[in-house]
Amino acid sequence: MLSVTLATPQAGAGSVSSYYADIDVAGWHTDSSVFECLLSQQVPGLGEAVFYHQAGESLRFYLRTPDSPMQAGRALLTSQPPVWRQELGVRDLGYVDVSVSKQPVSLDAPLSRLLLAELQRGMVPTLMRRAWFNDQESVHVGLSPVHFGGAYAEYHACTASLLPVNFSQIERSTVFWQPNQQELSDAMKAQLDDIVTYTMADPRVTGFEINGFTDGAGNPRENFELSRVRAFAVHQYLVEQGINEDMLTTRFFGSAPQFRIVEDERSAADRDRNRRVTVRLLRD
Image (cartoon, rainbow, N blue to C red; front, side, top):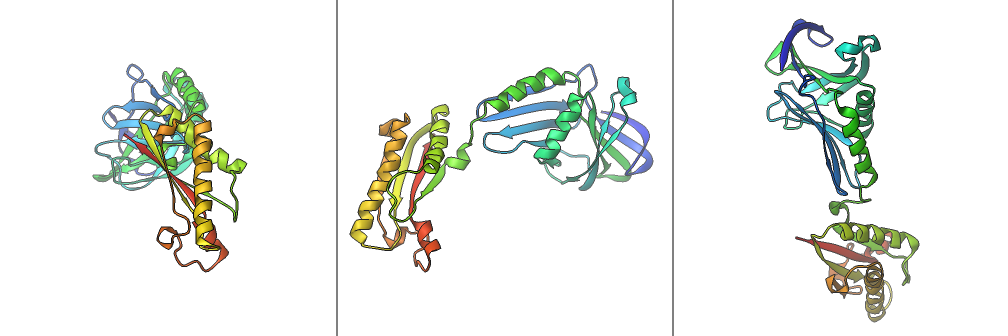
């Protein structure tokens, strides 16, 4: 950390505590897998700046620190030129929220992509906020572009290989059916394909629980058979796509009221919710 005295847009003339990686220690680190991609930089005296992209989710950026020096509120976000490129000038990127937490700053995908673009330009994205302990002191947190290019190339390659979904998105999946439908539609198959793709990549998945249900309309005996047909349509499709059949436990319950999402069906929408096959993934 380096402390200097500057004029800032938030605190006026006063003391500034600046947190950034000097050129001799600056660097970026990547962690890559088909489940998540991380691009991070250690910020001396503060903690870590992280670009994080999880499979099936949007990119986000966050600061991680055990003890944030910034007040809660709104921080000014700018893009500063490095000392050797002052001709580039300063860009105002707007204001972002700061909280009192271990992740005091967390940005959505558009702002995160903007920070990446500024780093690619060789700029220093910088947060400016008052210090929590003194309204007259300002805190600046900057990301260094030094050694960014190579690490970003690795990170970009990682994001291109991410799975389409993550475990939490498919751990409990529901396939809904139209009235009297017995065969899987293309949309249903696409939903199941994501489950298969994830399972093939994650050896921790140990099994599947497949359960078939119908709505309460019609004959209970026929509904029981229909729930069996639908459950085993899902079962068979998973096997055809390469899932070991020994991993599958398949059951069916017909229109039994205790297993309905909406027990007292009053409308077509209620019945739509009850016509379903659920797929639960088990994982070590």
